[in-house]
Amino acid sequence: MTRWYTGEMNELLPLLPTLVTLARTGSVSQSARLLGVPRSTVGRRLTRIEGAVGVKVAERSNQRFVLTGAGRRLVDGAVEALAKLETAHEQARAIGGEVKGVLRVAMPAGVSGAFVGVFFAFLHARHPLIDIELTVTDRPALRLEEGFDLILVMGTPEPSGWLRRRLSETELLAVASPHYLAQAGTPTTIAMLRDHRLLGFAHPGSTAQWPRLRGGDFPVRPCLVTNDLTVLREAAVVGMGIALLPIHVALPELGAGTLVRVLPTLVGEATDLFALYLPERRASPVLKAVLAAIAEFAGEQRGGHAGEVMRKVTTKDRGERRRR
Image (cartoon, rainbow, N blue to C red; front, side, top):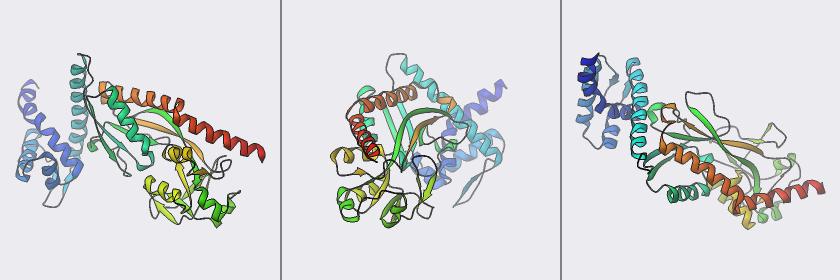
């Protein structure tokens, strides 16, 4: 065992990032571009990996790279080992009092909004030595070889090997511009939405559903379906129709009055924002600092201007509810 560790293990360890990159991209050419080396170097490294472990780890050709069962197990172990090494590295650097490192974050388009950029400025002011690599993707990002340290999701996440932490709560609501409502009329029942132009957040081709405030969903037929919240918000602002948006995406427009709530007592739902992270990264000073900053930022938003806008919208909705 000792001889293997000092021999084959020393050979294998520096090659693990290449293997993980190959698993992530599924392509020797793309991996070579990401690693900044020739394709031939990636091929030689893969040959050395198979020589070190004594088994074939992938089926490969000019077009494809597919892991074998042994290769999959090696990649899973490599990701865990590299995560532990990175955490240990961060902990050693944090002894001097500075939190320094890179955090790779993935989140779906449904989480994004103007507040994301504001948060990163907030984080940088507190931890200027933390660099963030942010990927917005609608593809499930729970595969280990994707290389993410933190994944943000809206709604309760499905069971997985990732640890999870509830960060905050947001609200989905129907909004429209006053100009659109002046022209098309303001609906007072869910059934009346059938006579309006609706703007839906969904993957094109999927069935659009909007939530009832008291629970359950109802189908809608949007004239615009997109997975880009910015497009959806701007289409609503210019009067294209009624959109369903997370409140954090529409806060500036709600505060300015360029968007108003529609059917506030009937349509909408509260949903949680969760952070998912690998067990091997739970002790990471960088991850701890980012999670703490998210919690602090959410608290300040609730107590600051954003919170004031939310309270005004809620107060107005309660007034409408009493009048009815």
